[in-house]
Every structure is written in C-alpha cells, then in structure tokens.
Figure 1 (cartoon, rainbow, N blue to C red):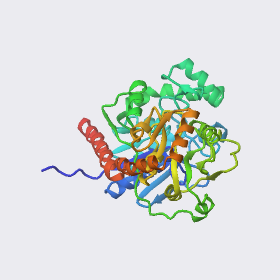
Figure 2 (cartoon, rainbow, N blue to C red):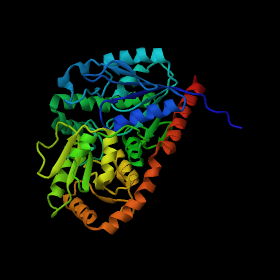
Figure 3 (cartoon, rainbow, N blue to C red):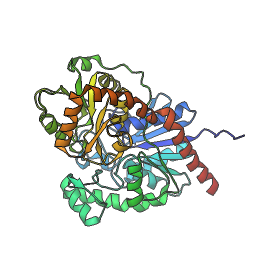
Figure 4 (cartoon, rainbow, N blue to C red):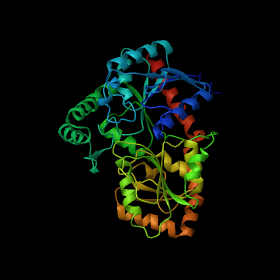
Length: 417
C-alpha cells in the first residue's frame, strides 16, 4: 500500500500575478489556488506593480509583491503598462527573495519568467529544489519571441545575432543588457534547476536545444479551472448583438493583431470582429470601423463572450508556446483558427476540432475565416469535437501531474541532503 505524499510548502515565483491580466498571470493564480485546495502551503512571490500592496492574502494563498532595484526606474522597463523584472539577478530582488525563503522555508520553488534569475541567485547555498516553468521563450531569447527582428523564425541564440536583433527591439543599450542577461544567465539556471515543466512539447524541445536538460522533465500544459465570478454585463452589452469573430489576448504585434486586421479587411460582408485585449507598446494606433475593441476585460467576461462568438482567431506570429485562449474557447464549443508551428498544434487537429494556418499568412488566415464564416456545417462539426479536446487541459487532468512533479523534485532534494 502506497503512503500518501505529505503536504508541501511551495513558493511560486511569477513575474506577474492578478490584478494584472494575462494568460501566464492567470496560470500562476490557478496553480497557486489549486495546490492550496489540495492541502499545500502556498506563497506567491511576484513583482510589485503600481497600485498594489506589498503583502496580502488571495484566499488561502499568501501573495508577496517585491520591488527590485532596476524596477524602481520605469525607463528601464520595456513596457509602460507593467513593471518587469530584469533578465539577470537584481540585487534588491535577490535580497528580498532570500528573506522570503528564510521565513517560509519552502520544500520546493516553482519559478517562471525573468524573476527566475533573481530566484536562482537567492537559492545559492540552499538545497531547496528549483522547478523552472517553461511558459515562453524568455530564458532563451532576450526578446522572448524567437523571431529575428520580429519577423522571421530564429534558429537559436548567438551573441552577435542576438545583439543586433535586441537592439532593434529595445534599443542598443537595453538590448545589450537583455542579451547579456539571458545568455549569461544560462549557467546560473543550469546550476540551480532541478526540474523543468514545459507547457508544450514544442517548448520542451526549444529548452532542451538552447538552455538545459534537467534531471526531471515533464510536459504539463497550463490548465483552466471553473470560475464562479460574474461577467461584466456592461462590457457584454457593448458587444455586437449578432455572432462575431473573437480575438482575445495582448494587442502585441507578435500576437498577430495586424495580420488579423489585414485578413479581416479581405472578407466580403464579414461578421463583426471583437477584440478583447490588453494594451501593449506596439499595439495598433487605431482599429478599422466595425471592429469592437474592449481593454482589460475580466476572465469571466471573456468566457461569457465566447458563448456568443461565431468562432475564434489566434493568429500568433511566434511559435506560440501553448495559448490558453485556444483551449478556453474550445471548452465553450467554439472552433478556433490557430497557427503553426508551435503549441497550437498540440491543441488543434486541423479540420477536426479547429483550423490551422501558417503564422503570418494573411491570405491563409482570410481564407480560413471566410471558410468558417460561410460553412455552417463545417463550423458545427468542429464545435462538436472542440470540447472533447479541451478536456485535456483541465485542472482535474493536469494539476495532479504538476503536483507529482513538485513532489519528485522535493524527494530528490531530500535524497541528496
């Protein structure tokens, strides 16, 4: 008879956490609450943002928001809408994380984003295992996109190539710092990481090729959970009465917003287009007539909007690491047009429960949108299969797998202590 695993003390380190909005933000919150419901002691360490408090409880989860030396200067952030930890150990963040580690004495740390660099440095001299969550490409690419000059696919990091690319993305000074931080930080992560959770097979292969192969590895996608919050009826009232095409996500160029608008303009007498997004420095300055845009919409409202959508579009220019919006839409019985290559291919089977087009392919996206808008039989066939595929990305399926990964990392640390 197997002995039940003991509850763990888990420190979750995440660049962002609510009230900020975003897929990775929500994933960190769902993980924290899911582990807390399963009896674990969970503390979240995240970046301080304007208007937030340093310490608060989010239900059964203790949240600690940390200021860093570099974060105190907004000019050093590439995004005016949120403070971002640097891609290297920030002295103040390291100090604050060490204090938190001493106070909480976690059995295991689960870290994602650039805050992982300061966390890895804070763990120096400790036997606490670090589980790195691969939710994006930020530990491989200074731009976080694996796109050269925000256009073509990149084959992997090289110093001179990355310096030229990041200079165009951030400017020469910040670009140089970002590249040196990401490339120089690989040794730090290789020394400290005990296990890697990749959200897709695609991310796992990128991390294996360009960062590290950890002693423990697992492909465990981010998941969704039931949300009892009420949608914002004021936002829903502003949406078109007829069924619409729906895009949800950051209004960044790499998310394909401009590709979507160009494809939409090629449609004759199309359904309305609704864009529910978060602001970004490179978002379009204006949207065409007939396109409804709502900013910073709550997750409950997004899910209610899917109920009224005709179908969804996720036209990423990058090889999307996963894309939670896809399985969320599919869970509401909506077909989604995603892009290949990347994590969308692990959620959508082309022509079975959704459609796939090449990233950046304006004509291909327009053809797929035209096809779904005009072929009700096809749309209904995809809609019947979508919820079945989406069931693979629920808390009930994926959280026990992640919980076991954390236990394995903790047992490994105990065995070597």
